[in-house]
Length: 112
Length: 111
Image 1 (cartoon, chains in turn purple, red):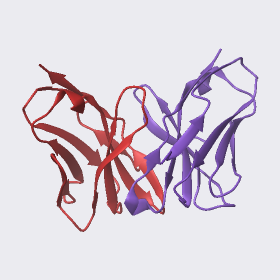
Image 2: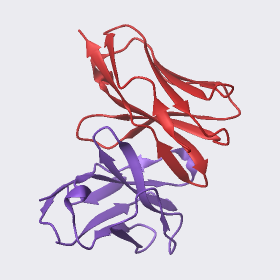
Image 3: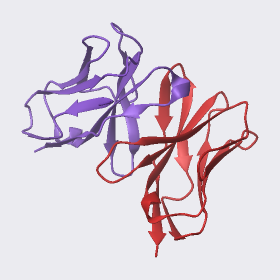
């Protein structure tokens, strides 16, 4: 009963470095999402995947790429990290919208 | 544009009293609304949802009210407890499976 698992939990990057945030769910959900959460800004959608093999941009996609590796896994990549990408990143999944989302515990990323 | 907002960023409530957290939405086409609770250091947790064909839905100690005429959503928590301290987000579904979140209200419980 793991739900949505995100790794790593914490990460510090230097400006210009790259990294991939991993997300996996074991609930057989079709849709998966990446959000970022900044103080006073709530949760903003970066990218989402409505089903395996499809991805679409959300509200704030610039500077990010995603891969829906299979039904379980949805990764978020920062190719060249910038201080503006310092945030807490949450992955979520859902079977369909009227069942709400299940969130992971988040990745706290600091870019220096 | 389409957005979800909250009237108050912080709400302080005496333990045992009822809490009411309000939310305004701007997209009249939204058909599904959700309330989430986020405790410090954790991801948002689903509390309760409501579809646009309803105006009230009750759960355990929580009630969500939807007023489509004025595009207003509220979350009522009965007999507030210390464990209710958290940030509460309303969210609306505006298209397909994408949900847009409001900025959140912090609920602070006074002893």
